[in-house]
Length: 205
Length: 205
Image 1 (cartoon, rainbow over the protein chains, first blue to last red):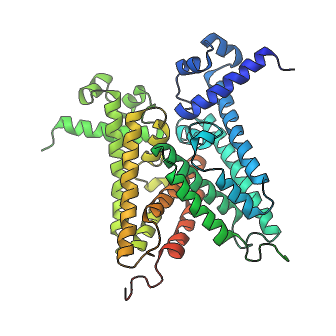
Image 2 (image 1 turned 90 degrees about the vertical axis):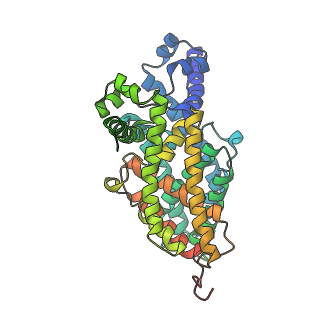
Image 3 (image 1 turned 180 degrees about the vertical axis):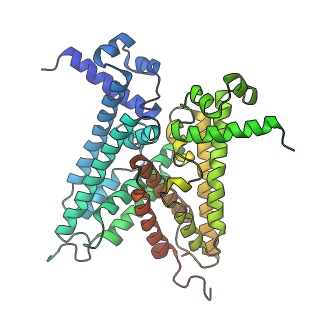
């Protein structure tokens, strides 16, 4: 049973996550939160003890939205290289089917917080580490079963994929044009096929 | 002849560029500008008609600092592939020899402004386009003289290099660890050598 209070709180978090991902987890003004949620300041502070607590809840929700899409892409395939390709395909530069507007919440909060707010920076770093470890784990699993070349550093692969995707998302958001992300995706597809995929592809391994 | 007023103005811009690149071109508070520059509010407004005018001057200065390093790297080599490698080498993840603290001012202002401030977004987009066009020009020149494979899209190469570098800078700034940027750099070096460099490398072309 979810009471009205909890439904209201979840609704505030969802709407605020969209707002903060566009205008800043630290810097979007409270007046915009009030306008977006339709809840007055007193009501907001009944559900969240501070502006910071709301920002952290919104960040966690935003990261959760991204994680759902990420995990769906990875679990849609069994071969490790195909998992990585499915992940790339989920970044098509089309804002209309993004999990939330405004680009990647981890990158957005990283840039905003890295020299400005230690609590948000740590949260962003933890989320980034989880993402990196998840992809490195996919690569390491693929290496174990002979789908990905053994001599490759799994952690480096995860960093390269994330860095290029994030840079592509940033350029596409800035230019409001899917082209940069599409160019990055083509490059990373060729990297997965040409550098990562084991020639035998696990057959007979 | 540069008067005292102009020297003071240049000093404000330089110090504010460092501050804004770390804490936000839009969002760093005026109190921090006053603290960093040692100039009171009235003094700042004698030199800049608004907070926005100061932000734009600081952004242009920050981009200029990056451009100096970028152009020095590119002009240190004559072969187009070697120019790109020299550019990569200038991103070594060592903050102490960066042109200014806080990472890339174009990415920082892009993330901060893309859904929040149209004037800064346009400035960031213009700077990004100039960087992309500069690198695409290096690639196109290299193709003309047979140093870079003719079948490659010069604009795509520029986007891929910039996206991966920016993502690597973001991850290195977030984790305060040079490793992500170093992994990206190794990947891009292999890309330049393996995918871009023409096999004949211009000899006999």
